[in-house]
Length: 106
Image (cartoon, rainbow, N blue to C red; front, side, top):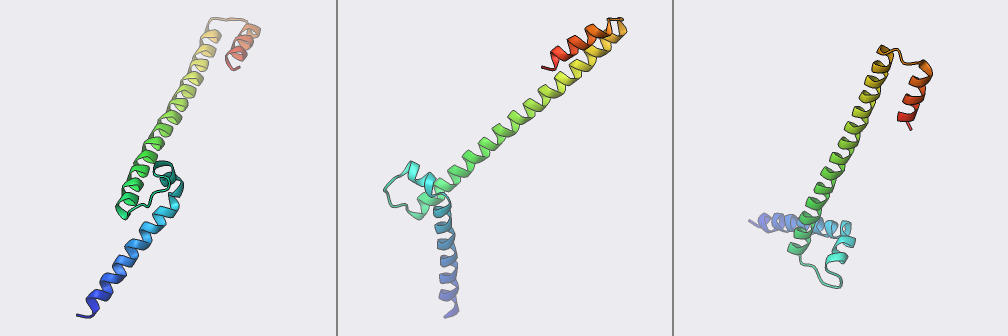
């Protein structure tokens, strides 16, 4: 039965250590929101959750933006191929084809 308090103390020490690590990792974020205030453990956990949610949203936005850029480039490349194909079918002079396609690639 003496073992139970020791195990419980070890568990609390691990929790406290992890909360302290979160506080150190996100120190700048905490200073922005609550400068010069002593943070309770619950505050640290709540702000950490909020920060992680915010970072997750930013990651989604960045991912969507990169995907949109890729889709645009892919579509533009496909359009150039179609234009080249059209020009070659309609016997447009090679010089005109070259000028037009080089203009599109600027």
